[in-house]
Length: 96
Image (cartoon, rainbow, N blue to C red):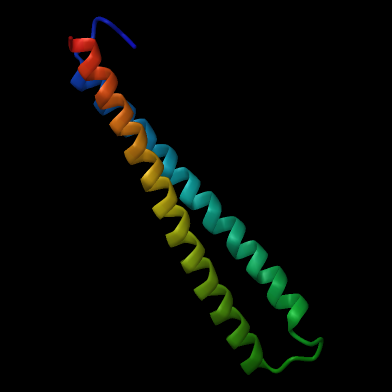
């Protein structure tokens, strides 16, 4: 920690960094899930599938990726909150 900067500023920087990391992690997770869902849809769908079944597979993949994205965002948000709490505690100790 930097002694020159006030603790509130340090805490804000830490939180900002964590939020940015969370955002990046969520985007990466969504991309990976979409890729996996497409692969799964290709394997599950028969070779000569009708257009209707392809649409269903796409819808299912979309739904799956949305769900996974929500989950990863929630997890990342929890981690960020924990980090911010730790930073706050450290800042309080440093004030003493």
